[in-house]
Length: 216
Ligand code: FES
Image (tube, protein in one colour):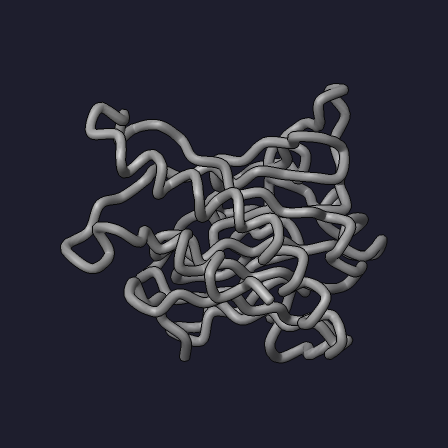
């Protein structure tokens, strides 16, 4: 059972391809340098707006099909899954009248700059809407992905489909879609608010720590 830990920065990549962990770590680490520097600069400005949204960039081209990138940004787990064709089809073909929390797959995607949808990539908050545990969803492992091919929450057995929609109790709602945007067709930015913690996190917001860990 995996519960979010607000004090343990973590970046984890789930993939059947073990080599991907090295590639993705380097890429996210490189992209994270900007995310590291910006919060620190923002912190030095006493007039900085604490409600300002900070972008954490992710290069989608580095996530192989069938793989999932798992990020922890300021205590929130984020899943970015590169869905296979059959997973997209299952998400699109679902009759939403059967759902506990009816949403189409398209409603859960953010448009790219040209207004079209990139259905290959699903971005969701990785916390079950029951008690907040982090569901498991290693693709290719049926028991881990749950009965609907998405995620399974080992807390009390909730299942989520390939769109992150809840398909079985006790979770009441779909996995949340975080604030994010497409900076280009191949790069997204996860948007988060800068939190200020007691020392030492005052100087090193969680995202900055992640970036530091990810660098070569
Ligand atoms: S926290 Fe997910 S089923 Fe309880």
